[in-house]
Each structure stands twice: as C-alpha cells, then as structure tokens.
Length: 168
Image (tube, rainbow, N blue to C red; front, side):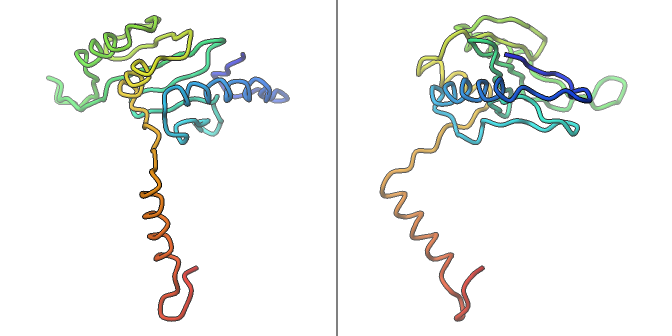
C-alpha cells in the first residue's frame, strides 16, 4: 500500500483504492481496540490531507502493509533551560514505561521520548488496552438501554418548543 509523506505533484493524485484498503484495514484494528469511531481520520496538515490513521492524544496508528505502525510520544512539558529559554521536553521515564507496556510489538525506532512500533497482527484484549492507554486513544462508549432512554428524554426536552416557539 502506498503512503504519501508529501503533497502530490501537479497531475498526480492519490490512489483512492489504496486509501480505501487502508481505511478498511484500520477499521478492523479500531474494532479490535474497542476504540471510539471518531479516532479514525485523515488529518489535514498545511493544506494537504494525509493517509487514514487512528489518532490518539499521545500518538497514532498507520496501516503498514499487512500490519500496523504505532507511533508513541510522551506528553510534552515546558522546562526552563539554563540559558533562560522555555523548551518542550517529553519524559524519558514515561517512554521507558511505554516500551515495556508495548513489548508485544517490535520496536522499530527508539528516540529519547518517542518512537515507533510494528504490530503484525490484531492485538488481544489486554494488548488493545495497553495500546489505547499508551497512545491516548479514546475507548468506544457503550450505551445501555437505560442510558439510551435517558439520553433520548434529555434530547426531547431540548427539542420542545419554548414560549410557544419551536427551537431551530
């Protein structure tokens, strides 16, 4: 599957078939992760649209052939350097913990506070929880019948006419 890291040249377009395959491949992972459907997206960066990915607060997952590439980073925090400038740094200790939690995946890039993993299969339930936690991916919301009835009642209250006029 083709992945594009730069904007297309004039007269060149993204192969929509490959993008649909990527989306279907990532949708299978999204189901295995029991993650929120809103996490599957095509990010827009500097005017061009990227490949499909599962996005979390601290990383993302891309389709990579028959497997998946997981990019994990640690939450950044500002630190005052000796020269008086504020700079953002991740946590090396948190990165070490992430490497331990994602030990079932092959580490392909090891930075000081970020890196990439390769996963060649769908994760087990325990592994899915670790991936969601490390990458900050939201879990799918499960709504019971009682909670659904409560939400519908609240929606009905919002949509009722106020002072004889309907809410538009």
